[in-house]
Amino acid sequence: MKSGQSRGSGRFGARVMPVAVPMAVMLAAGLWGLDRGGMWGDESVTFQVAQRTVPQIWRLLHDVDAVHGLYYLLMHAVLTVHPGEVVLRLPSVCAATATAGLVAALGVRLAGPRVGLWAGVLYAITPMTGHYAQEGRSYALVAAGVAGSTWLLLRGVDGTGARAWWPYGTVVALTCVLHELAVPVLGAHAVTLALLRVSGRVWSGWGRAVGVVALLLLPLVWVSQGQSGQVAWLVPPGWDRVGRLARNFSPGPAGPVFWGALLLMAVGLRERRTAAVALPLLLVPPGVLMAVSQVRPLYHDRYVLYALAGASLLVAAGAGRVAGVLARVRFDGRRMRVGGRQARAVVGVTGVLALTATFLNQLPVHRQDRTAAHRPDNLAVVSALAVSRMRPGDPVLFVPSVGRLAALAYPKGFRRARDIALRESAPSSGTLWGLEATPGELRRRLASVDRVWVVAEAYALDPRRPPADPVERTKLAVLREEFTAREQHARDGVILRLHVRRHPPADEPPGVPADVPPGAAATAGRPAGAPPDVATRAGRPAGVPPSAGATAGQPADVPLDAPATARRSADVPPDAVSTTTPRQPASRPAAPRARPRPARW
Image (cartoon, rainbow, N blue to C red; front, top):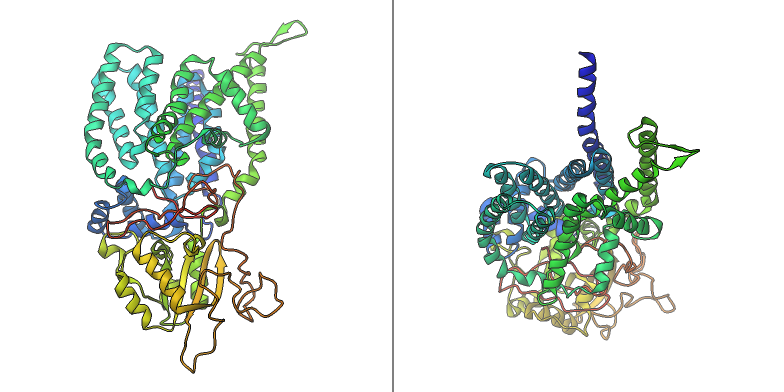
């Protein structure tokens, strides 16, 4: 009786431990540094939209962000419990944890517990996984849905009857509604079925499930086509994007870890059943989106995060095959059997050491990714700067209007200020950052003030690239014609600049010379002989850094670009976070070396 119980507990441990360990590793990695001290632009959209009422969210989706509608409704329920930055990111942490477990479960089903354990842990320690596990957007949830649907696909192949396909169809539908660019996973699954040479019965069950999914997605596709301006900033991907994606999908973006992972992937192709599932998942979704993007750009690395599971499975399968070969090497005329305890112990210890070394090798990357500086911007810093400089009742002007996201995410910093351009708030207008006054009304409003604070991104102040939006052109024109810069502060690529009227009243202290244009450097009016990076305002408080340029750049070889991973490279054009309504078109001009906010698809 005891021996039977021992065998039963051993089989249970062999099934559970390979799944539980990766989940524990991913949960620890996801919670590590989760509160990084500020939201960036896309996260702030999730934060402020999810706190609207359901009717307000529904109204918004008619004009913008329909692709994220289900995610906003989910986050509406989550933030009802507690509206905070950590809670905002917790669903992504939980989703990444589930994905690590599902990747491990796929490996167990395809190649055994050892490969499953390695695949799950590899997924958990890949830097790209950790990046999106700590982001308040839908990409980690989509990855979990794809991994779950792939596991259900294998269960449907091995099962009998039509009922086996209903769970698969349900999960695929929910995943594609979370983000419709998950649809290419259906192509990957079709290739998997072809490589596995399944029967006509399996094809029939899968086809019916896919047909139901397609019918459910048609309304979303129809609505989102009218909002395609949100991704107008994307460009056709070239071979450089292929190389960057390969590095992002590796446990290490360079060096021995990267090349070792590629070698193990090649070896893993010899495991036919594992390769039949992992290779299509790895190649088909990115390949489809990159091909379509040559005509209509839709590709970004974050949209295919879910394909990373295929890379982890292939690397683990290759490692398992190499371990099996090494365990059969003769020593002193004796052969070590794979099933022997000694061989299993050696292979297990070697695998643990290799995974630990891989993680330690990439520890600096993980640490850097858990800082606010590794995101495109930090709106908390903008708000803190505003609250330390603005006086009660000061008018504030956002250039461009997307900069209002800082005030929506962190209203404390702008509570004492007056938004001089705002005509209707974001929730009541059904837009992301509100509707602004017409050019004529905006001129009249600015004519009534002698000083105005401008919150701007550097590219928006470039006089060589005038914006297309007439309201944005009016802002710059009035500032250039009627005001002059008094002081400026720059933090994380965002500029806070005080403008005063060129001919102030007698009791107003004189400003800088009138010939200094608004787009000039931040040092207008500095003392003679002062270096260019000296603050323009004498007696600047300690802790306020000099405004040494408007953009806090970052090297172009940062491995995680995802919108979002680091400072944007020069090939990403400055665009608005998204287009809200026809009355509020995107107004960001293309500006090289600028660091704009991305669209949120």
